[in-house]
Amino acid sequence: MNLNYDIKEKLSRLNVLEKLIAINVVVFLLGLVLKSMLRWFELPSDFSGFILQPWAIVSYAFVHYDFFHMLFNMLWLYVIGRMFLNLFSPKMALNIYLLGAISGGLLFMVCYSLFPGFFGSNSKLVGASAAVRALLIFLCAYMPNQDIRFFTFNLKLWYIGVAIVVMDVLGLFGLNAGGNLAHLGGAILGYFYGRQLLKGHDIGKGFESILNAFANMFKASKKAPLKTVHKKKTKVGGYNKADFNQFNNQKKIDVILDKISKSGYDSLTSEEKEFLFKAGK
Image 1 (cartoon, helix red, strand yellow):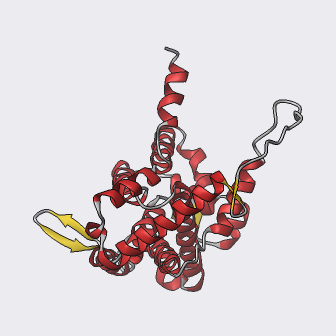
Image 2: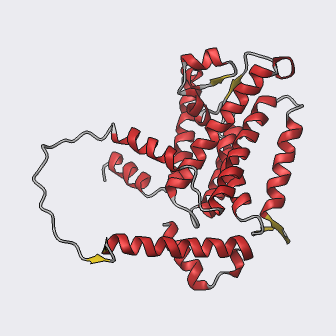
């Protein structure tokens, strides 16, 4: 079998967060030999430097120079991803990851600009921690009473969220103040996203539209447009059958997620758990 085809086949089976892990690992390996080039993907602490490399507000979240920094971030992302994608869509996962990175980067630059006497200057930010924090704190905010098994006893998700945020606040007085600022920025985004989603507001929809528009720019048509023959679709209440089924499935997912938020994941029936698992696929 062709090696190139084999690699593409394996990559196509990865979910969106596993693909993000793969990108992070590839960038880390490139950094071992092209470290000077990756400097252009680091996020500077001053806005004047940021203007010269605006892409860094996202790209910094894919750059790691320390193996253990990368390893622990990717392990967290893998564990959180398994829980997240059983409940929510891959697009929402990508939204929260990228918005968490942006939020963390903005807080980093704002605080370094407003309080240079405390945080210093000419610092650079790298690492996926802010993006990973956003996903974790989102889950803590959306279903705070969900039990997580920790060795021989259970912990509520919100206990874990509070403990992590407290450690990040204390970290502001340590050697990695910039990194902890980014962690807090990602946590703020994740918390706000989760609480708003409980109210029925998906604050990432606008950002998702921007991502879709950006992706469509690279979808060049290889063939001349063909004449489209429209087939009459069966309508149900003004919707075609596919749209109607999608609408019903989404309403069922909303009801199950509301049940999780109020009573925890263990309150679901086996049928509801199976339905969520299939929907996450």
